[in-house]
Amino acid sequence: MRRVATAAGDEGYQAALSLLLAGEPDLQHVGSATDVTSLLALITAHDVDVVAVDLRLPGGGLAELNAALTNARRHCGLVALALLDTPSARAAASRAGATFAEKADAAGLLAALREVPG
Image (cartoon, rainbow, N blue to C red; front, side, top):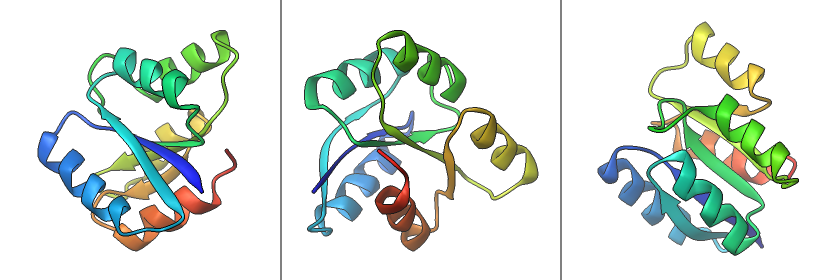
């Protein structure tokens, strides 16, 4: 079972992610964060395998998260979430070493969470 953390500034979207993951027997949602600092604490506390992160996460983006994980010698898979599938969103995900998923594409997000190396 893959341990999944989610991080987004929108509480409604966080709740939707939690419900989506609750129905997946191979994915365990270990918690949600609303900024990079709380996400790092969550990753450490639960030995997270993969994180779904909003590209517009308050307190820093994917690049900051990836740098903090590297400094802490922690590794987990990253899935970058964006409202729209645009070249700039895909480029931001790629620069951070993350797999891209569109927020409204539940099937695509679930596939990414299962496939991204953890």
